[in-house]
Length: 118
Image 1 (cartoon, one colour):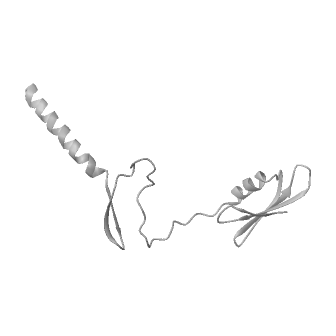
Image 2 (cartoon, rainbow, N blue to C red; image 1 turned 90 degrees about the horizontal axis):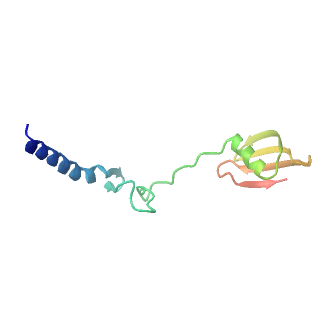
Image 3 (tube, helix red, strand yellow; image 1 turned 30 degrees about the vertical axis):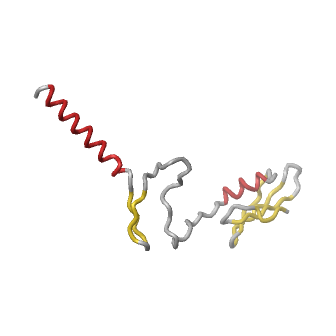
């Protein structure tokens, strides 16, 4: 092969890759409203990714674990953890503060919000 034919092959390969790149950056989503072509996931600054369909429920958040509940209770001043109870939508962490006083922290299992500190 001559240098000229190698340059032609290289030029054709470069042009083919440039025209295929925008096609590979798109996605397709099939839903109740039909088929949608989604833009590139990287998108412009502030872009959060493909939009959900209107009727699709929001993604379900996982529940916090007992270990995470203990971390939350420690952030409220609990030093010693005696016991952790899970019941219904709450997690109850019992223990003591740095002065030895009894402390109970009740945490919402789904959101991780503190319901009560006693």
